[in-house]
Length: 267
Image 1 (cartoon, rainbow, N blue to C red):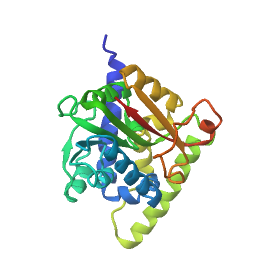
Image 2 (spheres, helix red, strand yellow):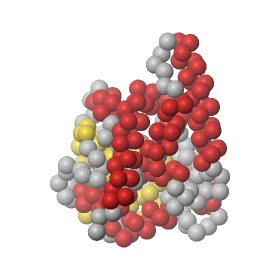
Image 3 (cartoon, rainbow, N blue to C red):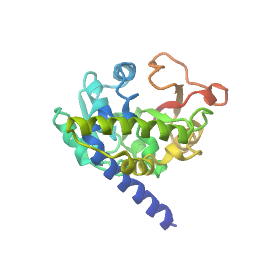
């Protein structure tokens, strides 16, 4: 039976993501919430994992969901014969297209791709934006080839004792206040932090959901059918390497001290 309240909530979160990312697109790569994504250490990690996946798959089609301005695909294109990015934000895709990246406007729950056609699907700082995670992971599983990988990165680990949502919001708000003031002085585009923070909080739905943990996502992945589920805990940009590391045990104290997690799921 369809839960109408869940359907309505999923639609609300989706619409918040469209509105927020269309609004922030031109400043996304310098925004407070994106600093870790575009750090040199994270960029090196993306390059290294793309290289590793190129060596450990057939190097065919790489699909990036929530591709934004095309960040992940710039690394994937070096090691895969084909790549395409999907996003629900027209403004984000406009920037990616200007970088000669193949893109498509699409919800990650309904990918216009044949079953068993993708060697890799990636989701960089995306999963915590998705209300109905099981539907999206099932869709990813459908499009992956047998033996293919889902690689996700930079999602908040709400098991972490130091991941305080109120502190996170305050730091982000102060940063935006400073940026807003500087842009007013230089006549650049202004985005008022007073209006954008509530919208971002809704878009990043699971950032503020204590149930959203590595264990929670791993359980859904195994239920769907992924044969191998590896979790990597980190401080974000401060732990650049996944290649060559063993999967972290999420039942240890390490899980309580690392604010981010990455996943490598194999079909």
